[in-house]
Length: 171
Image (cartoon, rainbow, N blue to C red; front, side, top):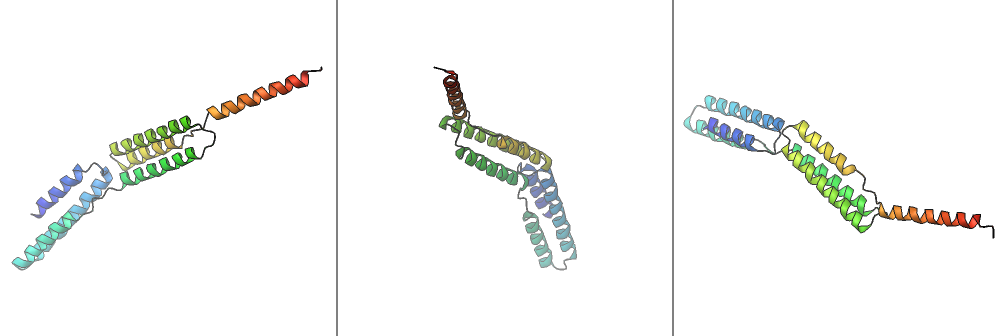
């Protein structure tokens, strides 16, 4: 029964795609530790009741092994935070038209989704870190306004040209 519980737990660990290889390895090692403890408790038991209790407690300990993923959820949280910061920066950029703002926010959403997909596809902690870092890099790309600054530059150039024409008029 203890070995069956361990096999079932390890199969569940292997089937959890949110766990990285390193997290799976650590969780399976914890299962093995609990199996060893449970079998020792069964061996050391001297009555039928203590054997039954040792078995039940051992199976419970195996089932209670923490298999909570950390790498992927933490990386996704960092991406979500960075995306929110990027959207706030876009909202606070005065030199953007509403169309540019909408396009920049869509670029942020696309970069966030791409990063999350790559994090989900990663199987190792290093892969998760790489996907997260590239996602943050993509989210850090500036989204400057172009229409308003170009219009202001054209106005400045026209004003300079007119002033030069006035200065050059000797009449």
